[in-house]
Amino acid sequence: MQSKQTYLCLIFSFLILQACSHNDCGCVTPPQSGYGFFYPIYKQYIEYEVEETQYALSQEPLVKTYQVKELVDSFFTDIDGQEAILVKRFYRNNEQQAWKLDSVFTSKKLQDKALKSANNITYLKFIFPLKDKMTWDINQFNDLGKDEVIVENLYKPYTVNNQYFPSTVGIVQQNDSTLVDLKKKVEIYADGVGLIYAEKTALAYCNTPDCIGKSKVDFGTRFIMKFKKNGKE
Image (tube, rainbow, N blue to C red; front, side, top):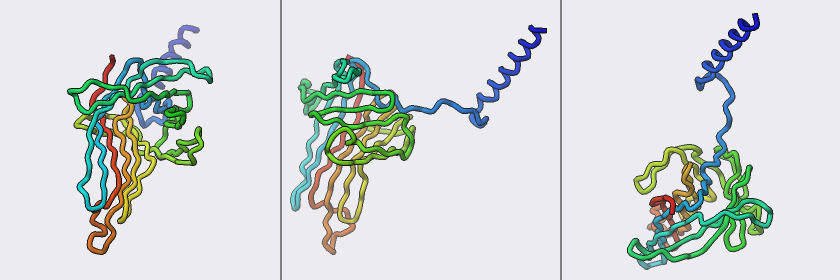
C-alpha cells in the first residue's frame, strides 16, 4: 500500500512539474535580479573607444578620440568589512601606443545595491533587483545633491560598434531635448559584461529666427564611450 501511494505521489509531482514548464501556467518563477549587469571578475578588462567633441560659437567642432581600458585589478576588504574591487583605468591615444595608468576607483556589489567610489565620492550605481522604470538617487551616499536615474529597456538587446548584446539595461540620468538645447546622460550595461556605452551631452542650439529648430549647435560638449572588446589578463 505504501509503495502504491509513493508511486502516485511521484506521478502527481511529475505532472505538476510538466505543467509549470510552460510560461503561461501561472507558476511563480524567481525574479531576475540584474546582478549580471555589474560583473566584476578578477583580471577582467574592457576596452572602450572614446570620442569627445567641443563646440564653440562660430568655430569648427574640436574632436578628440582616444581609448580607455578598465581592469579589475584586485579584491580587498574595505573599512566597512565588505569585499570591494579595485579597478585601474588606463588611457592611450591609439593602438600603436602603450597603455598608461590614468586613475583608479573602487566598487562593490552588495545584496541590494552596487556602489562606485572615485575621488572620495561614492555613487549608487544599481539597486537590486532591477525593475523597468524604477528610480533612485545616485548621490544617496554623497553630498552632491539629489540626482535621480531611471531604468529603461531592461533585458532588451542593444548593438554597439557592430557587436550585439542580447540582454542590456539603460540607466538614464538625464535625457532632455528642446528646440534650444539637448542634455543627455545615459549608461548602458550588458548582462555578463558590464558597461558597454556611456554618453554625456550638453549642447545649446542656435535660437535665432533663421535657425531655431534646426539643431544647429552654438556651443557645448559631447562625450561618447563605446565598448570595443573585453577579456582577461
